[in-house]
Image 1: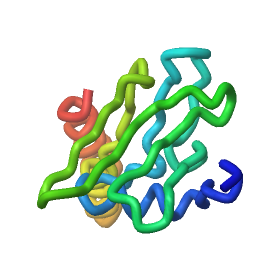
Image 2: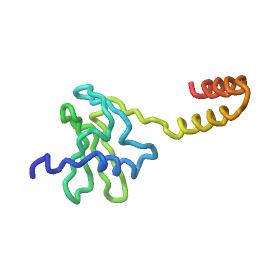
Image 3: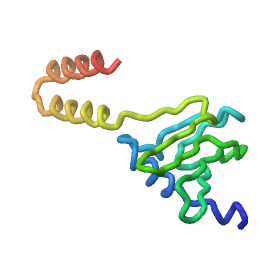
Image 4: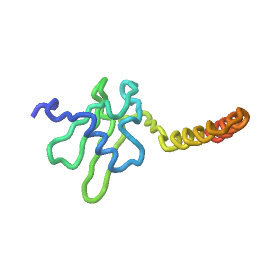
Length: 125
């Protein structure tokens, strides 16, 4: 079987990662340890044999192995030897800040809005 026949689309990687991680992992960014390319995990090449217990995520630039996933025996195992780093956005925190800012916008005086924004910025940074 040709390796291009084994390559799945980005939704396959998102589904596997969503089973374990709370955050949206297809939007997580990582840097390849081999070539240094930075991209979202969902845009990388995922290879998987039919009915296999795992998959391999490869760099879209150099085809270096970034991650290996295995789900067998009631466990998940991840090898991330091909990543320099992995960045996951904290979407829940961002949403909480946006909701708080919307609450500030309902106040009628400008001073209340400025104080609320300053307080949120202090907690964020």
